[in-house]
Length: 508
Image (cartoon, rainbow, N blue to C red; front, side, top):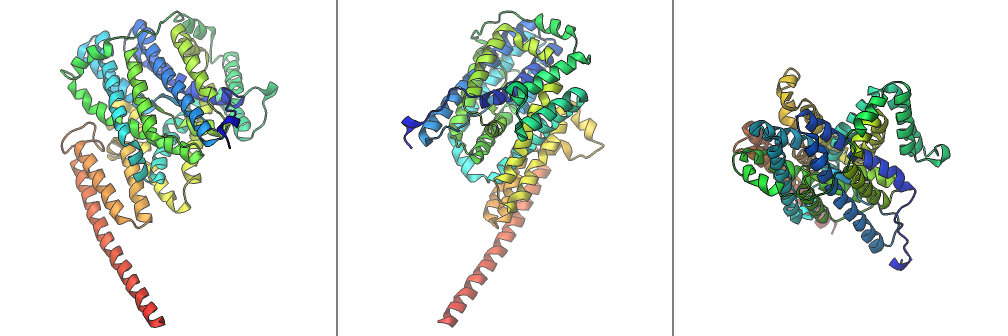
């Protein structure tokens, strides 16, 4: 089909549902950022005047670029059903930056302004590292089994997205259950809502009305939110470069958190791009990692301190039939919301229980994807790749107290949750190799796991030499066992070949 005949609309009706899913995902992160930083004592002038606008700039840059990529792919392949990649602040990485970078910097310096500069410098450096990692993105993608990558992604979805949001849905059952029913009926059941209102928007409207009518929300929420409405210009700052001197000085220990979480973020982008390829839209993972890195760097230059990533919500947007319009609209709305302080008002007016069901659907879609796009024989690999994120979820929610809180449950929870993305992918990859009887690959994956454990990318709180010694030894022994399996398999193959040759000679 000629590209001249392709009409790829700037916006279509289906983009509305996808916009609300993406907007609420980003909004939830922005609300968490604002509430957490205010709770740490950071003044509103930094939170709403610098951090939120800077984060919004990063979101705007990425959303507009991914809309451009979608149009380019649509014209290249001659089809109008291409969906732009969803993009925003990485939720797991956001928590690490809040509690692993910003909080320690604030505690050590006792200066909110300086702590912000250090965290912004860390974000800038993280973006730079991810941009450099992008040079190897496609190679890594082609050498990692899809079942392992999508299984790890499903682990994130079932814990941080579907699970967490289902908890919030049930926190106010009258609001959450009604909103969830609307989402399930409208998006999955394909039943048209009254006045043809998109299901996600209808769920938010009804949920918010119920919350105010039943007293879960009050006019005080509105006044508190409106108090922060004003004009917050999007202005560049030298903070990333000022904070860099401290990051490579007295606070160099923060690099032990920064480097592994950045590699994790790059892999998260790779996984999410791969999930979209399975859904039908194949984007260049290297370009996406570069965009995420550059978007993070630009956001840091404007005061934001959180790395960005391609969202797993993209597959949900694809199933909704979205194009590129939802991404463009998200960029515009977040730019306006950040500059006017409307984000604070939104976070106060709309109850989380009303918007959480939208993300429950997104999580459901992501959990289903690896099972729908992989052969049944790989289901065990998908399943084992999902499991480390249950431990990671517990760790994230208990933060620094995780060790004490979960010690009575199992001593394995904390080390399993540390570097969960690496553990999930490598365990899944080893399982795929075993299923395919590719023991050479299994040996390589187990040795990689041993190396990652040795330097602290897995099963350890930070980078260090011999960071997780017991796990290093364990993976090495696993590799030795795989060598034995490889030898046995080779012997069996040789025997089968010899028998086949004998049979051919006999027959001749």
